[in-house]
Length: 433
Image (cartoon, rainbow, N blue to C red; front, side, top):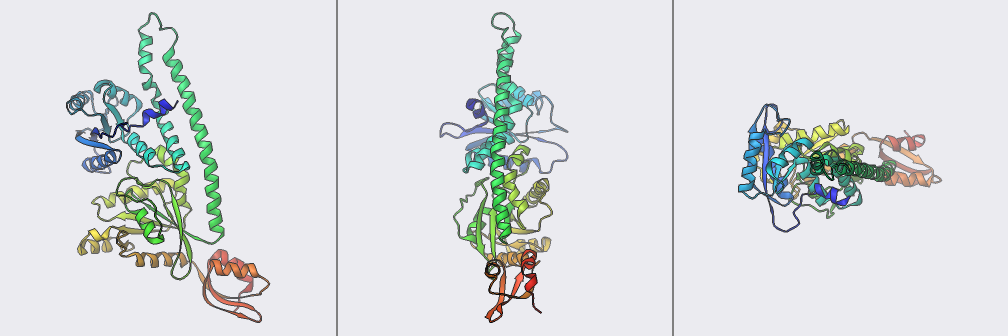
């Protein structure tokens, strides 16, 4: 079984970098120019340890059903791969199982044919470190693998069709059905484990909510600098590196704002255009952190020429998650790489945005004040007198509320405080004029 799953993993066993050819179809209506999309695909391939040696683009109204790029172009691609001694051909869009099988027959068994989905799955498998992250990746891998099993056993099926000795046992179809059952069973088991972990995560989120802790989630395109920003704001040491999908597992840290309000910051997995649907499904329990937050910080790489398209890709995924109605603050990171005129242009086109550099700390004070404003926007200021016999309520006020003025008198604890709706309900009976 593990041998079957390993087919999805395209990493070379040796330390030698594998030569890769990138292939894309330029067709009308693309969200991204094909050159930009292939450039990003090249970064993905390099993140996974490959070395891009060439790219191949074909202009079509729509992909060819049988071979995606057409049989003539596929033959040219096979010759190119052999002349460059390429080990893998990576297609920019997801291939159907039949397209992948047909292309593999044309280019020969020495050259692997994979698509963007398989490449991203492999990067996720490389970078997942927690138990939940590894389970989510394994689930997505199995879901990707299931419809492709027939192509993996096609050599046995071909032997059957020849007839003669040894052709009556149906070993190809029998093995295919066995493997399908094994993969389906594995998918069910992984889904069960992830549901158990999701319940635990929901309980933790509920506990934070009941404790009155304001929840902020960092979302954004991969490599926008979310982990670096989390480290700067909280003083933590979350792994951060200048590569795509450097971190996958959500990390939550708590900080206390200057006015005394305690909040949590959660770093979520980075998004990307054409993020495979199976990955979104597998990582829904992780991405639910964004949906359960009270504020989203949409971190944008201001220095990237495709920043507007990246923001659109992130918002599309937030819509898919049902988190598009959440309060959201655009945070343009890496502004130290921009000129003053470029920064002013962002302020004009995105007046609601906060411009920062997480690397050198520029603008972080403004961001902190903006978070504090958003966190207290729905609060109200009240004065309460709480009897000393209500010790737990007084403790709640100190833990959850922002205290403007307080004093301990003979009639009890007198304080002017800022409260949210939940805290207001708890102290309402002790309000004074």
